[in-house]
Length: 88
Image (cartoon, rainbow, N blue to C red; front, side):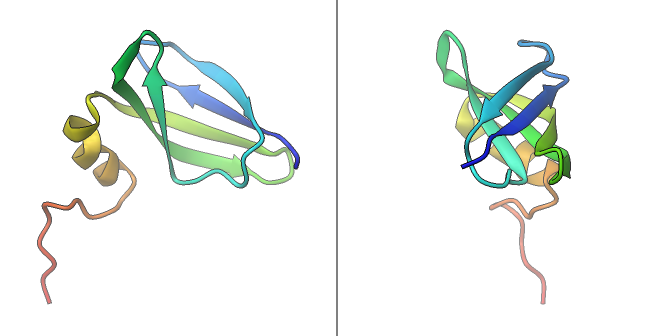
């Protein structure tokens, strides 16, 4: 499997950084456990992907406990939150 370079931008707690991963095509969102704080997550939404260079850029959305950041992450990704009503 080939490797991808993920670039994470804008997180005030970790700064900008890159990570090499051997996962498949990057998804719309990325969650990262905060180093040294296993109950906190840093959440990112994908801004761009370059299939030729195998690079993806993610921007920071929110940080916190998983239950407290879910709606911010879904909103930033353009997905309906679990609290949203679906109108017909």
